[in-house]
Length: 437
Image 1 (cartoon, rainbow, N blue to C red):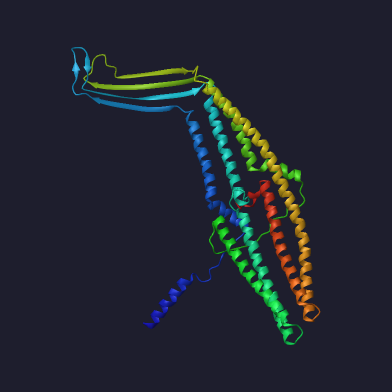
Image 2 (cartoon, rainbow, N blue to C red):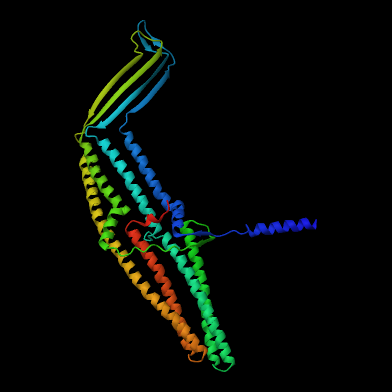
């Protein structure tokens, strides 16, 4: 019995501890792109706009097809009234039939409507792609993008590494100061200063870990992943030496926003033609079949009939409605043309900003690499001098602070450069090229 109790207790402990050997999921930025685009509510909303546009095309196509309707009725009277030759009121009466109607404007207005609906589907698809690009890189919409959240975690993780190495160095410095105090080479002030620096480094270590946890939580929210994960850094490929004019040309040809606006302009042109169709007559064709039965019947009762009709309708006066709608459509066309011109200027400026930022970050990164190497050599030299009594405690503290500052600046520059590469990809419309198919 005791053995059974121990076995059950062990099973409960293992169940509470979770699966043995479970590993954290490891994600690259490209992995997060795929997951985020599949799980984001914002992207799903944009995807529904494409489906709405497809449904609207179905509505436009329905105007080109004839409409077939069926009808029937039955009437029961309280009594039948007849004369010797005529049925004044039957006892019951039933009728049924079918009607085929087709109505179109003579200038083909409905066909233009179908063309507009088709181009609107393509336009919403480009808007959907632009929403994906914005979600992956841009944060102008008020939400942090996946790329920024990813690099914030990497930056915070690097901050922990810097804080840990700072604590380790200051502990060694504190221990060295303790030994030198015992042999009378330094005063107690040196040890107290070392303890104070170490205490500050420990508090900075705690703050760095909290920043890291907050950055992880933000990435979980943005990318839609579980909280138990690790990130694997894959630096983006350096774009190399590229010309600004070539990048701007590529952006105007590739950016989803530009393609969407070009389609919007074309739709506005067709919309003017569509609205002008109201000036043309409407031609309606109809074919009708009817059948009826009554009891009692009369010799003149028509039990079945078929007929067709042709109706031409033209409103001569409608209070200026058509003129107002045409004027409105032309204004919308001018708006679309102006919007295309304005967006071209905006895209060119965005590409130039991203290009200049990349060049700047590249230069800063190279400079800070040299600075970090100098700060590392300087700290090593000063600590050795302190061990032999050739440097003061202030020299050690200054050298350590210089090294910590250089490490942080180097980390910021490294991730700033990688972000600059992605910003240039976003500006030129190539950010989705990193998404695995």
